[in-house]
Length: 298
Image (cartoon, rainbow, N blue to C red; front, side):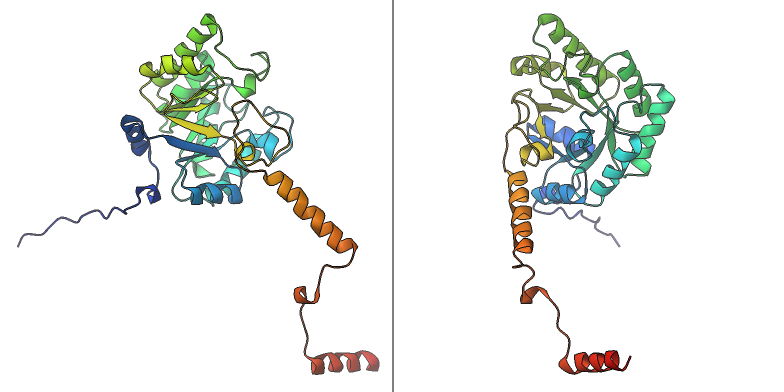
């Protein structure tokens, strides 16, 4: 008797399928824009899940947006891992990437692989991201990739080393800088990176480099000629003070709403309009009478 092979049931909405690296590569091949956001806890990850984004990065930007540091440099590995674990619990479909914090991978290949393994084993990340395309970053990217852990690269403005770059400013605005960024991107690709972030580089430069890059390129301040875009969760939703970098587009002003909500609560408490009767619980009159009676006998 012949049997028919089982057929894979594919939902009509393919966005509900978990994102994989082969699917990501296929999106690049087909020219489908890739959506990536940062997330640092369960609520932000759940918002990314429900919005149907493709990639979620637990960025070291969480050092500033949720932990209150003045830069990404001070944040500890265990702090980022805590954020990544929380984000993991809010995700099903998006592919989760953990950002290796400053000082957690530079010392040696062994340190880098150990750190990456913690993101995979403890936080459930599918990949890690590291900054820079110099000799150290290339060696670490190659070592982590050889250990079987996918790596996302990052060139242009690299916040962890922004001091050496002259601060938080666009990179690649001279021919020399542009050639360096191009060479770093190609080198990261050759080192095994499955994707590369281009941050704060001229749009024309990004477009010039793209034909030499066969892996998906995610831009943040790199123009529309790349394969996808990423923004920091707190930037795009307005959950932080200030306007942010030039490349930020704000889609909501949630911080203002949060302040208004807390302010309204404080006013209600102070004028005793909260809580109202509808916010409390009742007790049966007979039970209250019995309680009072016991209290009087005592």
